[in-house]
Length: 423
Ligand SMILES: *Cc1c(COP(=O)(O)O)cnc(C)c1O
Ligand SMILES: [Zn+2]
Image 1 (cartoon, helix red, strand yellow):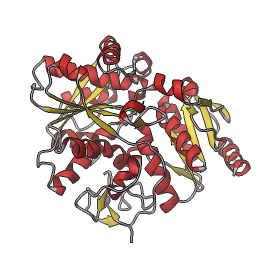
Image 2 (cartoon, rainbow, N blue to C red; image 1 turned 60 degrees about the vertical axis):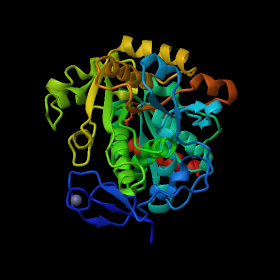
Image 3 (cartoon, helix red, strand yellow; image 1 turned 90 degrees about the horizontal axis):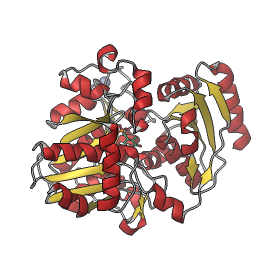
Image 4 (cartoon, rainbow, N blue to C red; image 1 turned 180 degrees about the horizontal axis):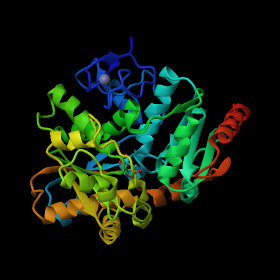
């Protein structure tokens, strides 16, 4: 018996985990984990596996990477907030932040690789705008397991690790993030190539949810507000799910943190749909000229065109349940926030993290967030400069470079023979 089961919020049925990504009854809903233990007990493990009780894994990996929460002084003073906590998810050894690939995607990759090993069969395939791919390459390097990573050509130089590996098969697609998703989906129609699952993957969501768990344990209570930049919104859904578990635990308060999820103008489909009060994203209205808009944003990891917004248990439900809201931030505001954070906190940010900070500044200025409220700002990535100073940097050369309309049957054969040759 595993220490959790899977529950569908659509039909309520319960399932055993076979790396299950969706409800076998066919519901349009994100299946969730339900853990036996309603009280969070921390394990004696380094990094994220401290929270293994509420992760869909039995085993653990010896990785120091995990969420870190600390009370801000610099930004808190500048913003006039008395209780600003930062969830820092990157590399910053002085604060014990040990995510070598510098984004919270490593919090998703670590439990996912363990979950695949325990419940799945086949080689994992991951589509990525860059950060997810790097995180999975690093995790593959740590575990020695194989992974196939499909990324847009533009992201080629984002694929590096701090531990050398020949177990990551990189497929570069001449196109944008949405094109890579299509190629990865096509590869996964082969039975021995396993789709990682994105937002549907409970290991990914519960991995990201540890940011909320770590904050609650550190602060001693749930925060009033949670700020995060989103592309798919998976991190926002994860924060909500983790908060519901913490409410169930009973020791951290009974009010769910209000979610403040942020996108980068001009590509803001979820902001538009939310402001129109719609559960559906209408492409013509919410993301006109998508390709141009995607190309124009500062933080391109935030440019998912098919986020799990309207699905049961998705972003719309998360915002509704937490009385949350969406924010839009311009490039200049985000760039200014990145510089400001370097001065005030002393760390370089991933562009997406700067987008979240810019939205918090807006919300304070307009009075949406009051000075006494407990705020959790998820800085989802950063510390690239620090990691470059202290660790090796191994770029990973692509195994295949293909056009967006590649003939996927032959690509599948090539990828499978790569997998055999490198086993
Ligand atoms: C992927 C990513 C995000 C967005 O995460 P989602 O919750 O999946 O939308 C934000 N920041 C960084 C640094 C990321 O890599
Ligand atoms: Zn169902």
